[in-house]
Length: 510
Image (tube, rainbow, N blue to C red; front, side):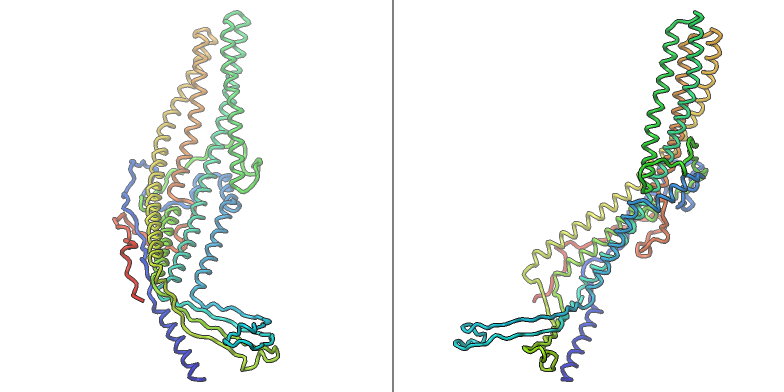
C-alpha cells in the first residue's frame, strides 16, 4: 500500500519537473520597426518643434472651456469607448481561460444504474444462466492533467495576453479618434457660426444698398435694373443662411452622439456665436520614430503580430505527443448502505500519451495557415506605420498651406472692404455705376466667407495633426510597454524570421 503511494508521488514529481523544464516550440517574436526618416519631409516653421514631447492633453492648448467640457463628457459617456472597455474585459477573461490549461481538471461523478444482464449475452461468455436485475450506485471524481511539455498552453497564454494588450490599444486608438472628432466638429461648428454672422452682416449691408437704390430709382436717377440687381444679391446672400444653419444643426447633433446623448441643444456648454478656437503658438511634434510609441493603432497592430506568432507555436505543438496524468476514483456498490465502505473503492491511475502520428499533413497545413496569417499581421503593421507617417505629413502640409492662404485672404478682405466702402460712397455721388458697387459688395462677401473658412481650416489642420501624432492618451503608462521596446533613434532593424512550415523540425519517430 505504502509502496503504491510512493510510486504515485514519484510519478507526480517527475511530471511536475517535466512541466517546469519543458520547452516551447514555435518562434519567439520580438519587436521590430521599419527604418523611418529622422525628420519630416516638409520644412517646418517656427511654430513647430521636434525636440519636445507631444502634449497628450492637446485640446487644453486651445484655451476654450466649451471644448474642454465636451472632451471630458465624451470620454466619460461615449458608447464606443464603453464597448471597447467591455472588449478589454472579455480579453482579460480569455487570459484566465487560457491559464486554466496549466492546472488539472477535476469532474465530480455521481450515478445510479438499474442493470439487467441478458441471459443469452452474459459478459462472461456463459449462456443459459439467469442473472437477476440489480442496482449499481457510484460516486467519485476523475482527474486529468495535461503536462505542457512542448508549450502549447503557454503559447496559448502568450496569444491571449497579446490579444488583451491589443484590445487595450484598440480602446486607446478609439479615444484618440474620439477626441479628434469632438474637436473637429466643435471647430467646424464655430466656423459655421462665424460664417452665419458674416452672412447676416452682409445681408444688412445689402439691405441698405437696396434701400438707396430704390430711393434713386424713385427719384428717376437710376433704372429699375439697378434695383433688381441689388435685390438679387441680397436674396442670394440671405438664402445661404438657412443652409449654414442646417450644417450647424448637423454638427450639433454629431457632438451629442459623440457624448453618448440624443441630439439636442447644448446651450449649457456651447454659447452661441463663439469665436473659432486658436491653436497654440508652439506645437511639439517630435520625429517620425515617435509615432511607434505614440500611435495606439500601431501598437495594436504590433500586439496582433505577437499574438499571431504565439499561435504558430500552438499549431507547431500538435506535431509532438501530449502527455497527461489520468485518474478516476469512484465508490461503487450494489447496495446504497455499503457505498462508503472501503471495499467499494475503485480507481484507475496512470499516464496517458496522445500523438497525432497519422495527421501530420493536416497539422503542417495548419502551421502553414498560421504562418501566412503572421505574414499578414506583419504587413498590416508595416502599412499602419506608413499610413501614420502619411497622415502626419498631410496634416503638416495642411497646417502650412492654410496658414499661408489665411494671410493672403486677410489682406484680400481688407482690400475688398476698402473697395466696397469707396464704391458705395462714389455710387451715392453718382461717380460710378451700380455694377461697380455690386461687384465690390459681392467680392467682399466672398472674401470674408473664404477667410472664415480658411481660419477654421487652420485650426482643423492642427486638430488633425494632434490626432495623426496619436495625442489623447498616456502612452508612457500603457500596459505591456516594457515588452515592446522601441529604439530611441531611427535605426534599421530587419523583421524577425519565422520558420516556414516546411522548415519546422521533424517530430521524433513514434
